[in-house]
Amino acid sequence: MGPSHFIKGQVQQLHVLDYGLFKVHANGRVIGICGFLIVTDLDERILVDTGFPQKYADDVVAASLEDRLGGFGEILQLTSENMPKSQLAKAGVAIGDIDLLIITHTHIDHVGGLCDFPGVPILIAKAERDLERPMYWGKVQPMDWPDREYLQVVEDFDLGPNLRVLLVPGHAPGQLALLLDLPESGPMLLVSDAISRPDEVVEAFAGSWDEVLAIKNGARLIALAKEKGAQIIYGHCPAQWPELRKTPEYFG
Image (cartoon, rainbow, N blue to C red; front, side, top):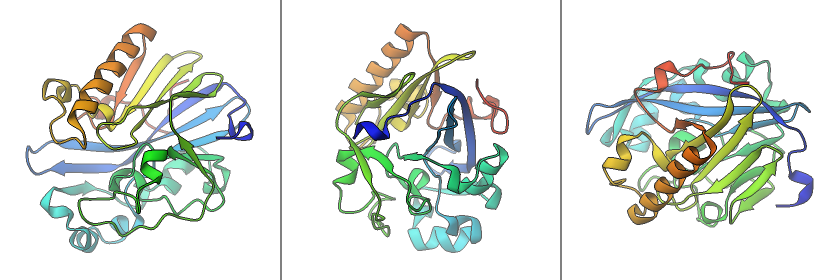
């Protein structure tokens, strides 16, 4: 990643974006699908993850059948209001205002809008970009990599003065997490699906791409949160999701 792409300003705002609700068939768990908008004091705008593809807002039944998603679960809520364009608009930000797109990993609920930000550099783990196609869902891999500049992460590094990118594989080959320090809210750790919910620790991250790595990096993130006194925002925590403030409200 070249120095010209590093964020210059201090992170001032963290917006939680609501990309819809999903029900997991195996256990009946209802989970929120989230993304994030990070804004600095220099008006740099970073979008983290993009939710499901647009086709799910257009026709959820047809899209689910096409991707064979029904074998895993079902979308309970996903309309045009849950797509990045509408969620960003709530924060007063347009698609064209995004300076950097961060993809934490390439599962369907994080990578759906990967192609929707022309000209915007994509920060992603090298292990994910090295895949022939984004992982998407199961054996369904309909997406091609868009023609973009890719900033490929191979280790932890500071993206900005108070924004650190963490490489924490386990859930996925190139899972990323983010540590930021806000002026009022203080340290916040966005663990994404590295820890989808606290119970995953007790369950030893069963079903992860690499359970051993997931356990190791899950423990590392929990220790880091304790060390920094950071609030953790989990990837898909049913208990936390309804209580999180969401855009246009934000953590500052």
